[in-house]
Amino acid sequence: MHKFSTTSGKVLWYDVTDNRISLWSPLQQKKTCPIINFSSPNTLEADKITMFTIEMTQQCNLRCTYCCYSGTYNDRRIHNNKHISIDTLNSIIKFIEKHHDKTADEITICFYGGEALLVKDKIDWTIQRLLDVLGQQVRFSLSTNGLALTEDVIDWICSYPKFVVNVTIDGDKIMHDKHRKTLSGKGSYDIILKNLELFKTKFPDEYNNRIRFLATVYSWKDVLELDKVWDGQSVLRGIYPVHISHIIPDFSDKSRTYDTWDDKNIFYHEAFKAYMKGQKGILSNCFKKLTDIIARRSYHHLSSNLRIKTCYQSLFSCFINVDGDLYACEKFCGEFSIGNVSDGIDQIRAYRQLERFTARKNNHCSTCWAQRFCRMCMTSLNYKDEEIKLMCNMERDTIDLALRYFCEQKDWERSQKINK
Ligand code: SF4
Ligand code: SF4
Image (tube, rainbow, N blue to C red):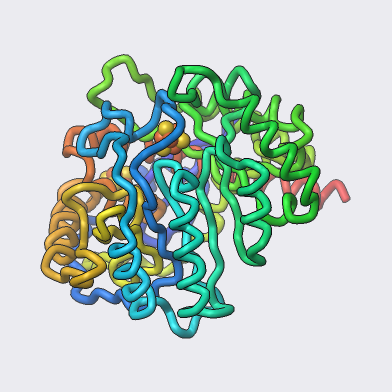
């Protein structure tokens, strides 16, 4: 049960039991959140995977200040010279052959690092083998910082028909170079932009079809900046980031600050203005993503006994590290491995993690008003209990704003219809 308001001062009420929103009244205030008892899942399926992400190397040619592999994050590996071996790649191919979804239209193989292009020859070797095994079903994706996107590499990428490239760009030169530095500590923007320009000039159609951008930010204020500068570069113009990630929380770093409800509200207020003006781009995309959290809800009644459903129940993606260890995704690390490519999925380990997650859900989420929208998943097991409480507050702030702006959007759409 959650009382919230719109900017215009309308006071509203969200009821977690039926997932509905209504005008607030003092009578509703007496209703309390039901207590939900979560039980652990008892199934695990790993034969319908459609996305395999392979860590090709643990080395990188950049040293981004916020990198989770910089050595400042708990439980994360540090950059090192470990590259994947051909033996491991052979085992990975056998694993993919066995566990991919045989009925899917497409199976995606993502090459990940560090900087995956440091072992380009091994990527090529893997592609050849997977084309033999999966044929037309397979498509490839590469995550790169763009520093090694030389002419040879661009030609090589374009020689494969189904090969997309995700490049991380953090805005303009000032924003990007502040964090994304080379080994010698210089900014990387100029080299990356030059590489992208070459790609665009040589293969203009392929560039539009294959290049996708990712951006990393500290705060929502950075996203406002990102929006201002993005179209200033011809190679970026009109191709907006498919994903903007916030730097993962690091509660051991006492100098780190996190966006408050007010910070987020300022951002979404601007984003809503862009959305109402019909602008295409970063702000409207962020606004849509926020309100979709609410728009996509279902109205079924919340049961007081719920069996948890996680990505382990029907694993659609899987991260394989340089040693062949398996994780549900690249956000997991260390002890959260669920097996390895030689021995397959270790059910005992996977169920143990599910039990830990269920215990945490019963501890924290049983009476939480935001539980039907909350996006915190199994990867929250990476954090300690007291850290989780801080992350819960941040998540509830976002859900509160999602409710607020979803209702404002509906009011605005209604007023638009009336004016017509
Ligand atoms: S490019 Fe990626 S892996 Fe390399 S230092 Fe930057 S964030 Fe880390
Ligand atoms: S915000 Fe926290 S307590 Fe609430 S549902 Fe999400 S994880 Fe659970």
